[in-house]
Image 1 (cartoon, helix red, strand yellow):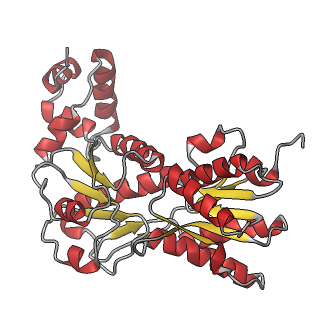
Image 2 (cartoon, one colour; image 1 turned 180 degrees about the vertical axis):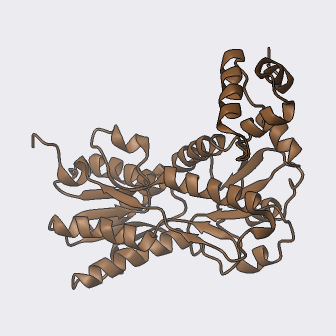
Length: 341
């Protein structure tokens, strides 16, 4: 049975307003009064009601997270991190799946759930700057992902070019020279794939190597099947690399399956680096070296950006913040081999 503020106030011998001030951490409460109220809270087992607190502020207590693919383990893991980060601020997360389609991203961005949510975290793939510039919804919007817009919205994303360069540098340091890139989009330009391709090109150039376009394998999508198809096409064309840098872990896992079927050993014949640090990559027959974005930091910064805009009200900063969480290169068996080899 939920304990009320009135019951806490009666137990502590103070007013309901004083208990409310302590619960909401207002500063103008004497230490002695704060201690007495806290002792009553602990004795009665009082738990604040975050929903009621949000309603008193004219809010719903809900933040929406809109991502392209909930079936993609990266976005599933990121969503879990956002839920955890939001809970620390007493917010619930509403998940939306846009499928990377412009019309669905527009619907979400233009505020069709304005009365339901307090803020929106959006990972757009297809929206253009003019789409977001035309947005007339006043619900705070925070962008995640690699699409960059010169607009007054906070944006949280790792440095994809630097991350790709770190992956290629690792392969070069192992003596690999024919490094393929798997994951350039076939049907349309893709901002994240383009940035990682630029990083591949830049690191090769810095090492005095030409970026061989015959080693760029284009894909329809970024799943395991796409990686397998791309790797098979590369090998069938007679372009056998000695290393592969894949757009993401799923593409890398699909590519490694084809390598095994063709009798090629990882990493002896072909070293492989993925991107995203999915749990699946840690438990294959050959564990996957990968670039690990700090998903927890991305989630925390996105939620904090929404809460900051909500809390600041009229004092909220007008200009956008470009926040860059970190990343790590995790070396595993797909480049280093097993310890007993």
